[in-house]
Length: 253
Ligand code: SAM
Image 1 (cartoon, rainbow, N blue to C red):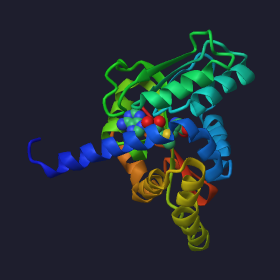
Image 2 (image 1 turned 90 degrees about the vertical axis):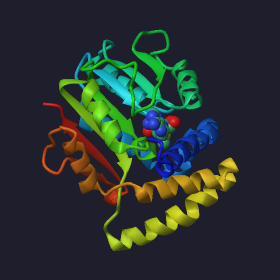
Image 3 (image 1 turned 120 degrees about the horizontal axis):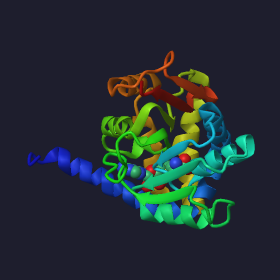
Image 4 (image 1 turned 30 degrees about the horizontal axis):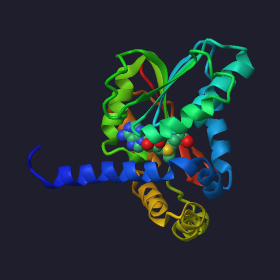
């Protein structure tokens, strides 16, 4: 629209998110381990186990970053099903993050196969992904960085085949007051300090912490998913580590 404020705020958010991830791309993996004390690996493993992909699954991993989800997915198919027909398309708005992912894939068994490809795309407009073309859609620690969460979910619905599944792994809200107190200290004091020490970039990590707090609580996000047409089982989500993170899931039926 030409009415001003909203657009400015949206553009600012997009360019801030771009800057943050361009800044952190090079040491993103190290920082992830440092900030989460390695726990993000357990959450991502749990995410893939919850997905339990069958042989030949076609995955679209949105906001794929350096490929953590894609790699775990292909490893699962290979190790559990001895399957080399599963495939993943990783999309990310930031070419620097995808470059790190490509480099990393060079050292995996999938380097010279057609099981993995990379595309620069905005989660809100997956212009190169056709309607009803994927079995599973994942977005891990990406959706809270997007400007319009509802548009992201709507695009997920469009690209999924009937029967397909939307899965999101994201930071969530802790509702236990004791754990919450520790978590507050950790996020507001420790994480920005770690950002300063390890990456010499306090601001980007400060942004990440704030973006976590602004994201809707689990039940509200589950409703956003249903509002776009997905069917959920029960509450539609599963808390991880007292709700520090959560897995949301919905089916296109
Ligand atoms: N999924 C990876 C993981 O779990 O390690 C990467 C997560 S990283 C915290 C968030 C990613 O979201 C970044 O690579 C960033 O570039 C990407 N991103 C942010 N906004 C996006 C958008 N609108 N569309 C697609 N990707 C986006």
